[in-house]
Length: 570
Image 1 (cartoon, helix red, strand yellow):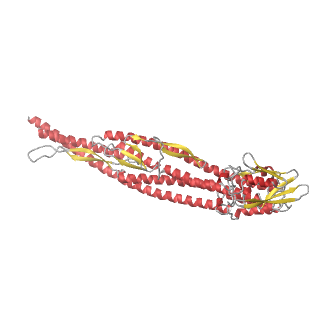
Image 2 (cartoon, helix red, strand yellow):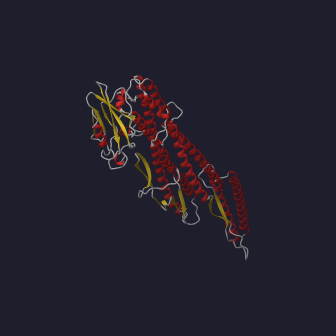
């Protein structure tokens, strides 16, 4: 009877084991369409025992020793890093594509078209400088160009804010994922404490979270002996055992632009990223968009300075009665080229001529003003010095206003204008300017010009049909300048270089994304080969285990009949 009991044990173990193996196969088939599932295999082992006689121990059947998850951890690590590279490249590619669309080139609303229209309006004014309609056309062209610059800069700032929002959303997701990974660490360690159990579903969930987290940032994973995963960002731990440090976002002003910076929630430390979606956001925002903002501001600044440099050395249909500089200084007592002066544009050693006309007699008196900025003898010209020099000109009074601007006023019955400014001081101070502002955000048509288009300085001499200064302004579009703002290029060439460089950056970003995407898809295919479910293979396993189960059932049935026969004999 002992032998019969052992035989029944063999049958029972076979029925239970193959039923479990069929269940494992069913679980695999059920997750055929689940990309995050890792295929499992039932591990079978022969059970020792079942003594028959000396040297004859056939065993006690079969048992399920455990489950094997088909996961290549090295491949998973490469997949996480590849996903990080792919998502980062995708963000940069998307941002640069959006920026290209924003510039709206090859349409009649792009900056290039507006620049051409603006400078063309001066070419028309040159032919008839006294025509009020052509003067209004100059202001309309300037307004249209200003609007295009404002629109483009606002669009770039909207992109920056959109990327800030993406960074905040991604950071919240990363914090949630890290917290869930820490909780799964605890549950996996608890379920696998016996050393035999494999918490397959929990490990699948944790692997999925790690892949999703790896899409957001480049993470490294180190598994401990007890099944816990420690997650690192760079050299800093994000998840350790059952604790997540969490992440947060801090808003900061950098060069006048608000950016969202990712930091560790527990101590506010900087998170050093090298790849991933959040890294791609910072690259797109802090490198590419920052560069576009800088270039656009330099284009606008160069336009303002170069146009004002020429315009301030001409004369309109009427001279000035009172003129106040548009740009205030930080310090009116230091040299004009001293950084402490706070001028937005560069001033150099040179001279200018101020012309005073008696309106009754038409007599013009001209006086040369030295702008001494040679750095010698400690007598370089300050704003206060310039005001004093102009105040000494007969028929004029000049002073520094309370907010440190230059103000020049003609005596009653006189008017004045400037010519031949080789120092650039008038453009830097915003004296006799066509444009106000310093960058693409604040550029505008100067209020005196808008209020009185007769002040548009189309003439060099004040002669009735003299449009030579308008001609100089028309030629400025394609004339190389010495402005560092424009890299010594013409305004049009600088803008074309901007657009050309953007096109190259966008094409490079697209190529980088396509390359990263190809690598990622290749690794996904490798993972599918290792961890994915093959329906044909599972069908074979199902038939094999079903056949084994049926054989075990027949075996038990035979034993049952044998037992009945033995009982009748007894």
